[in-house]
Amino acid sequence: MTGGSPFGALLFYSLPLIAGNFMQQLYNTVDSLIVGRFVGDAALAAVGGSGQIINFLLAFLWGASAGAGIVIAQYYGAKDEKRLKQATHTTVVLAVIAGVLIMSVGLLSSRRALIWMQTPPDMLEEAIVYLRVFFIGMVFNAVYNMVAGILNAVGRSDLSLLFLVISSITNILLDIIFVAILKTGVLGAAIATDISQAVSAVLALGILMKTKDIYGISLRMLRLHRAMAKRILWIGFPTAIQQAVICFSNVLIQSGVNAYGTLAASGFTAYIKVDGFNILPVMSFSLAATTYVGQNAGAGLWNRVKKGTWTVLCMSVVYTLIMGGIMITFRYPILSFFTSDPVALRSGVLCVWALAPCYFLLAVIHSLAGAVRGTGHTIPPMVIILINLCGFRILWLRFVAPLFHSIIGVYLTYSVSIFLCALMMILYTWKGNWRRISH
Image (cartoon, rainbow, N blue to C red; front, side, top):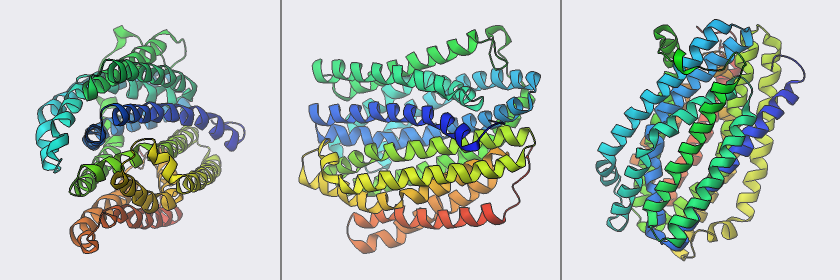
């Protein structure tokens, strides 16, 4: 990424990431489609409600992965083989440790967390089953995400795509077998997810062990380099806190939706699954910005940093404008794939109107935040996002949403907070002192 056209470098890096995220979201969506159609609305809501808790705990893994990606991209851009080797091997060890910790917390806290979220009784037990079985496979999830972060940091997003395609196909086939044919309900859906994650983790780790490039790993060299682990976690910690707190605010929003009943939660779940086709590519562009800026900042090419930031911002905004238009235009046919209940559909459609017009603002937030993180300055984006996508949301849910006496008051939490966050991110990127490498 340190030579040639910024647009070409970012496009060819982003396309496999976007395609991979589409595949990932596809199997998540098929998972929900099969559960909704073959098990029912309560099971669909159970899977969706569980997802907020899963994302909250995974946020710490995403933070560590982001920190590792930034560090590795900078060393790769600077061609520092010694420290690059230390970073890649430390990253794999951190993945195993993170997977075990998240699995333990998830297994122990599933029931309490779901009860705290006001999960309706008719979906509680199924949600507990789904969560606990999902967390059993957390080590595989952690290893894949961290190894994929290594591959993405060195520009090999094509390999991440390959593994996601294989994993997605595996998950979809197993969903059909376990849920549609064997009638195992949400238990089968969770087992299918665990197996598919194990497949992707083994494949990704195998590629890193076989490659002769400088980012390859060896089992005998796996160890936790303390100084490197400290740097990875120090850079990744703000991102982890940011993601965790945002996910916590989403847990509160899920609680607000749950208060309107199982059918409202089912419609919300249907929308959130489709919404992934927008937000995951936006995060791909953000990762592209982080990797591009990291490699070029590491090489001292600051003019390319500026050009790349503008380029990825434009690419992401154009994509989200198209996706927002599609979602608004075809809202009823899309949501009807998941449920035919009119109450659930109304809940999902209201969420479309609250969120889809704001897609381009999410593109602005995450593209600019990704560029800033590429230089190692992860705290300013964290603060901006925490203020707006967490603190403001909590205040809105507590004091403003109840005034609407309708679920739309809950959904508008997203719209207003996204607008304020985009405004602050633009101001910081324009005026802030982030155009230097942070160590």
